[in-house]
Amino acid sequence: AQSVTQLDSHVSVSEGTPVLLRCNYSSSYSPSLFWYVQHPNKGLQLLLKYTSAATLVKGINGFEAEFKKSETSFHLTKPSAHMSDAAEYFCVVPVSGGYQKVTFGTGTKLQVIP
Amino acid sequence: DGGITQSPKYLFRKEGQNVTLSCEQNLNHDAMYWYRQDPGQGLRLIYYSQIVNDFQKGDIAEGYSVSREKKESFPLTVTSAQKNPTAFYLCASSGNSNQPQHFGDGTRLSIL
Image 1 (cartoon, each protein chain N blue to C red):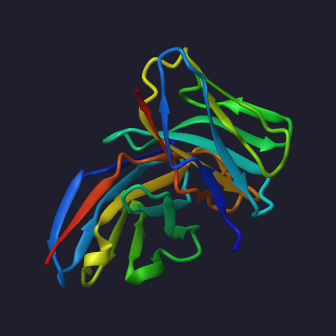
Image 2 (cartoon, chains in turn blue, orange):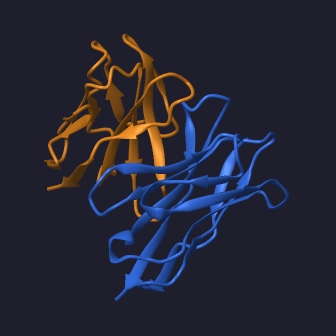
Image 3 (tube, rainbow over the protein chains, first blue to last red):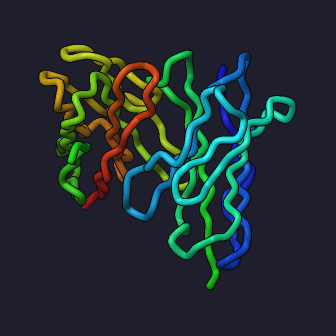
């Protein structure tokens, strides 16, 4: 079965420094993968998605993620954190071939220190 | 603008009471979903519907019920059988099987 593990429940960075949020996946085949962001008391917004077209995926707000099959990882990065990046981030994998059922990681809360 | 509207934003339930959470979408999506979010647990699927007049149980359906009489609407009822209903409830929708889910802004349910 497909699953994702977010390795850090909390990450704290200073404004202007790089962000790294880690996600490992488990899948019997090369999956699609998503990152979503959730600001407090809001719904989830899609940041980016990997669909096997390219291993380095660029998303919104300067975020990107690299799919590494050898490491079963899909880590989310940003070169320079902004205060507005403070939120919770979820790594997501479809349960089956389509996207209609998905499994969420437990989330990583990003704190940005001024 | 197209999107998903959840209402109310905050809801309080008395003991023994059923409450209904509204979810409406104008994205013309076929599939709709209800998730429950608790701190530190990610999102868990309650029910989903891939087409009008059809829906399936998710991972934590006990104590909940849904209907899908219209494509645009997928209300969730939290029944008195749900003994721990305090949570943040999120509704989502998606188009064909290759489109990611879009989310509403959620309803926070608390017990009085």
